[in-house]
Image (cartoon, rainbow, N blue to C red; front, side):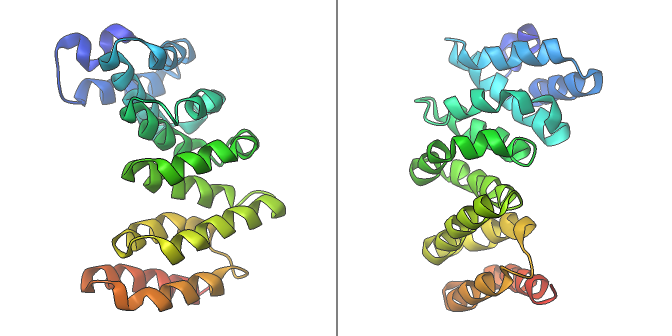
Length: 207
């Protein structure tokens, strides 16, 4: 499968990598997927970068096919190769609801990546935390605390996208906390940002 990667064809675009992900999904080719996951540790940066693209494209389509590799993705969250770091968080965001136990056992590593990672890493970590909110009560409380603190302190321009990501964890029990924070930060938002946030507020208020 490595030979099918974009870099092996001298391509700089992602088309071949996406096509490979679709092929692996359609065939549910577990052997081929393992080869791609193993490629994340390839010394050739181009190969590793293409492999992580294939991985999270699979995750977006059939997350169950990469769920067994959660620990592999966690191990790369602090990679010196930033493409692997944020790509791994992206992969985790697709499987967090399938592998909550593994992620919760490594939550400190995930939190550290969230605190120190790139914009894309942070974006996808919000999805991870939101999905983990829907697990057991103790874990839900901790994840909710992380999310609420994030919305109290993050940059205003991040609020619309991140609250949309977090919306999967809204419940009647936690809605008031989200509403309070969003209302308090409205004055910091541009008109277009406020429009998106108001849609979320309507969703919260209807719970």
